[in-house]
Image (cartoon, rainbow, N blue to C red):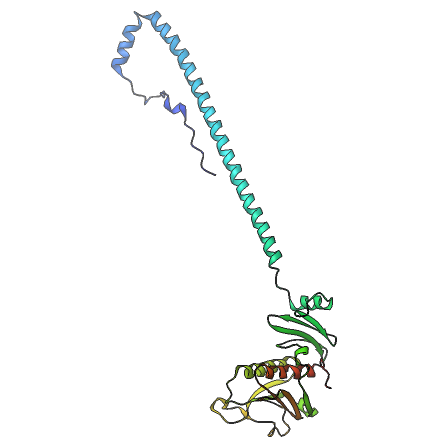
Length: 287
């Protein structure tokens, strides 16, 4: 709101009585001399002056009051316009926020997506049921959950069971594989491949979270990057739990005694990992 103009005090413009008021001695002498000879004129003038004096201030007061009322009206209109503008902006903000939320809904949690999936409210590319397990897609990963040893394990994978169910798992694994607390995740240190590394990471995470074993990094051969790491393969496992990764044109999971050999290239080696996980989680039954 703009500042209202200060009111002009008409009293301050009038002469002020008091000891400090200046007196013109010559003027007072002339007034006293002429007052005896022109009393009637003085009286008339005095009465007229009084009337004018009385009339003047009243007229001036009404003029100022009218001016103040006009200024008050202008200020009130300005206030109402400002208030109206603020309310309008606020309403526009609320409407805009509601429209944004409508067309850009807040991200849903994985649990929310599972709830929708159980009700059949998701499209096939967003979620589906597989052997009683809910799979939902979020940020490029498929999420599901299983119960192991009385606890719920929520896990992400790059491929759902429909995409990997055809990958074969051959052979058999000794119960000794899970007797200890550690499992050696062994890799070829000479391989520099993103999919190869992704497959190792995906398996290591799920072993730690879902299988309740501790993944231990190992290498298939000596290399400077493998300093202080165990050198082990499926052929040299000697009863130790080992998972070995190998690039191959064959996409397959081979179980042998206490060792698991995962083979594939590109995304296929990642699919082989997810196929093994679904076997561990009893989501895909072995044929």
